[in-house]
Length: 378
Image 1 (cartoon, rainbow, N blue to C red):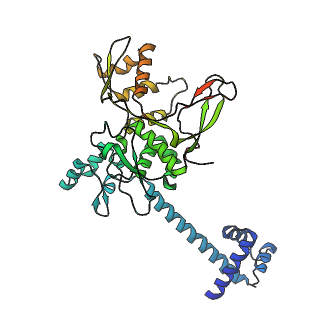
Image 2: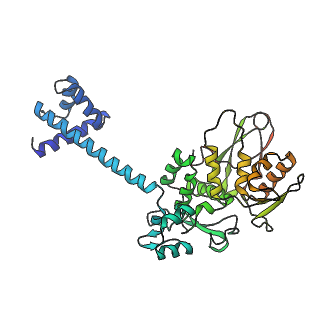
Image 3: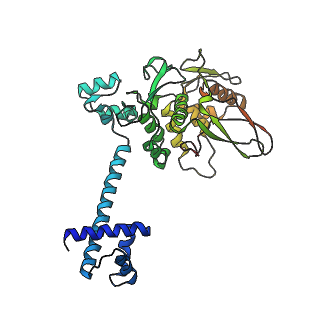
């Protein structure tokens, strides 16, 4: 069979497939299963208006197989390319863009210029989370001020008053949030921040947790619109109440002017002074890993203590190896004081709105939470 006739037959086959709502793979399977003499196969080729012999049938069957394999090869290469693009890059790759350095970390630049091994620096600084400059094919970025206004960063966010450039979330980031491995290891948020924050050289693991939560909701608003459906469980009857908020209408709470880092807390009962640092992305990642670790059914939930342990710098008169024991033996008054203090130093979007449970009427305070609707619209 010459090339011209083969192309004519394939063209007619595609037209019949379109009319019948079939695809090439279905036809290929029918041809291989039924063979040339099957009435169903003859009816299909009869509809093409062309008469083909057994030998031509075999050639067309082989040609369809080649087309399917070619498509599969293209798809595999496309997926490989996308996986490579989506995978966290090495710090060496992130610090260069078309031969130009795109980090504002002077210590790192010094090490690179001196020829020191990048791997050593990266492993100690988690440098794979550094942000890079915008590219031409990305959505346009806009400037936003972090609730911290750049305080507590020691030069990590160098723009005046903590202003950074961010671009909307794309399908690339949506795929990150649906990758279970990245969610369980705590990498998902850092990958998204690394992609969407377009101010170069920011280590996303060092962004304050309060600023990170703010950025997530800000990204949600500029990517999917400001309306967001919240679900609040009633503390009395357990009913799930749904309400819609407008993220753009929310107040922004800023850190108290007198807040410094580290900050100390004097416990009302034990009178011990605990010195804390503020929570950052690195602490979040450790907590996410802890939450996703397999646990025994009878294992006590130690999440609060683990969270506190990640933030403590010093406990007055208590050696570090005994901090966990000390925390586990605190009475309720001291635990409550720690909780309230950590709430006071928190900042970002806040809602003072209260709703009534639609089932039992109990007054409920809305809490900003991330649910299954966060990265989608109705």
